[in-house]
Image 1 (tube, one colour):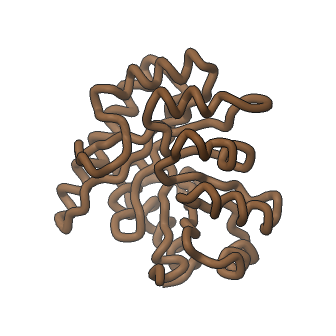
Image 2 (cartoon, helix red, strand yellow):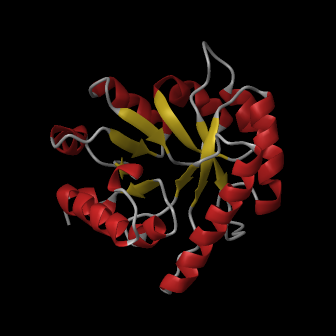
Length: 217
């Protein structure tokens, strides 16, 4: 697959469920890929890129154009926020109060965040448990952090119906939170193997790496 093929599939999936393709932001996940590969997609007109390691993000941000919107999508240690915060457009992986306290330290307002939800209650995965989302949201709002929505990485499953159920659960959670906090609108869900299902279930940001850049070596 290629970048343009992914863009075309996003548009087709959106139109197929009555959505406007412009409602969906493609985050090209460029982790472990060289700057030259990112430049190629940048030259095609893309501006939203995602990384999951703090040092790699900082190095790439310094080497690439300033108009790139960098999304941090990986688990973030509190001692690495100083690398990520200055260059991040949107943090997808806010998942605990200690990270929130670290995120607000520094000059100016902190970049907006998404709360990462452990939607499948998997012990090996990052993310706040479902029953802790509202408490973390309140902590973030009290600290003055803009919370734009939710993010999740559902359990791997070859059954599309199971994937759809996880995406739908995240959407329902977002809808409930929106009734109390209107700013909590975004849904970051869906990757290379399932982004079309995620779009059908309301994703506003999808995170695609392999289909754009090829497999990691």
